[in-house]
Each structure stands twice: as C-alpha cells, then as structure tokens.
Image (cartoon, rainbow, N blue to C red; front, side, top):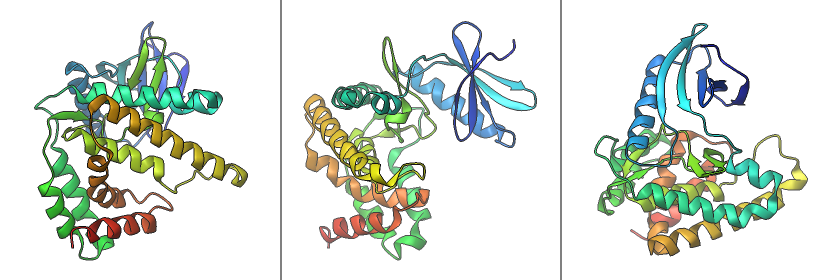
Length: 268
C-alpha cells in the first residue's frame, strides 16, 4: 500500500492517509526503531485498556523510514480548535477535563510506574536542583499511590476533536499512578512562562490570560467530576516541577526553581 495525502507533521514524524480509515505516522530518518516499537507498545496497551485513544495496527518500513499504522482520527487538535474559534475555550477546557477523567478510570498492570518515572527524572535533574533532589524524592515517596492510566503529557495539542468526541494521542509517556499527578502536570504546563518564538509580542498577554482561564476551568471541571480538592492536586506540583526541569523548556528553569523552593519550605 502507498501512503496517501499528508495530514499532519510534528517534531518526530509526518502523518499520511493510509487506506480508507487508517493513518501512517512516518518517522524522520535517524529516528531509532526501538523508540517506534516502544510507542507502538504503549499505544496498544492503553487502547486495549479502554482509553479513548487511536488503535495501533502495524509497524512498516517506507522508503527507509519506520512508520506506525494507526486508526485514523479525523479532526483538529483542541489547541487549533480554540485558536480558530476562541469562544470555544470554556467548552474545550471542560471537555479536556472530562476526557482525562475518563482516561483515569482505566487501569492496567503493563505500564511503567509513575513514581519510578518521576524519581528517575528528578535524580537526572540533580545538577540543577543543587542538593534538593533527595529531599524532593522523599516527599514524593510519602504521596499516595494510584492505579490509574496517566498520559504523562496531556495538553490541548495532544487532544483531537472528532465528530464522535475527543481522543488523546501521543502516549509515549504513559504510566500508571495517581491521577492527580497527571492533572498537576497539565496545570503546570498551562502556567508555564514558555512562549513559542512565532508568537507576536502583542499577543503574549492575551494568550497568557487565555491559558490561565483554560487552566482554571479545566481544574474546576476535573475536581467536580472526581471530587478531588485543588489543594491535593497542588501538592503534586513539587515533584512534577522538579521532574520537568530535565526537559529544559526555554524560559522555564528559574520559574520552576522558584516554585520548587516555595513548595519545599512547607516541608522544612
């Protein structure tokens, strides 16, 4: 079978039509096959557990490049939906919370452990944390366990809005653990000072205000559905922020270190 029209493009791959109802995610040259194999495994696990995610079919080789064949999920990302129609923001924020809450209702024994992933990332950032990594890991160890499937990188550009509801994509960071940790990471990303280079300066304040509103509505809806408390979500910000340091997102380091110091004072 030959690939059809291109329908998407990201940092690691291009996406093409593949037959009538499937999509080919074709990775760029140099992308290691074992990474593709891992993504395929994660995708199959979460889909088989009942998570609203695209099914994974075959791994193929096209013109010397490795590809994955997915169920085709047609529609814009939630981010693009709001960018093209800002009045949809409140609706999308609530739908995003509902999707994540539904995901957290699924479980499996086949995914990595949330706490182990966090601890590994925090220890990797030891050089930046300057002696605070062990204290943060000790706090993390005291937090409640969980058995929910968590996305690990749940944000509006990883949600596809289809005619039949929203679907979550990109499950490379999937794990099992406490759902409030997953929510805390999403909230942290909404609050990030990072701004893409292609955004005009005049738009930075309105965009930041929109992100703050999205975060507030999203958190309130998640708490309504799960009966969780905002303060219980906020407790997870310490290990989540420390783990995110390893990602080295432009403009975030000093902000994250300040957040970490504020949270650590509560445990002094």
